[in-house]
Length: 243
Image (cartoon, rainbow, N blue to C red; front, side, top):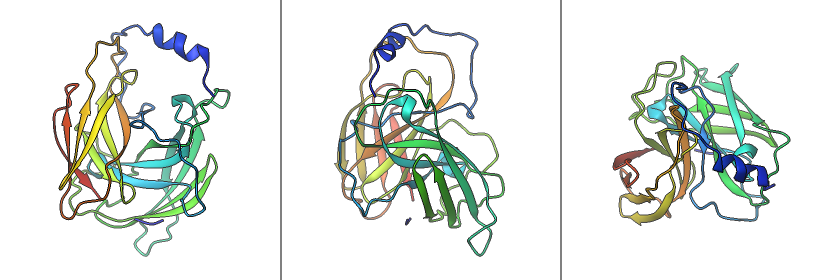
């Protein structure tokens, strides 16, 4: 592939009530939580956005850099574009801020937005993404992946998935309560990917089913197929990394 903190937030978190009968579909706003987001200084070489395949090709994670506060992360919408690629494989992506009045933390971290892939796009072929909005104005060529078996436009199977967005960065997609995203305890790189351990704790969670995106840095990309081994918080399993 080429290419402010508010006291009200704490009160809201303390007042979370388990909601029954309010299930939301995959189209709901995702909960995008970077794993221990680093505070970094942007460089001229860093792109304003990156992308990764998730949900077996039915969705794409759009990665941008900015405040890690949940309310300050952009939402992503996309539609098939006129096409900069020879086979018409293009998507126009628009980013918008979830809450323009939100107070945002002053960190500068990678955060991911969930983008449903439009019907008719073939994940096995390269896709040109034209990204605009929320300070991003860039074109990304997302390489196709023949191992992706999902069909854009069709429903998800709610299985965890993951994809590379740069040389060391991976986006992990899990499904569950939007108010209780996974809490990463540790990331241990290995010769074939990484083991990601999650903290298990009692939390009052809403009863919706939403996509949760977790941004991980697992170090240098290993040779050959790579896998994330998930441990804890009822997420145990092996997840191939696409891309």
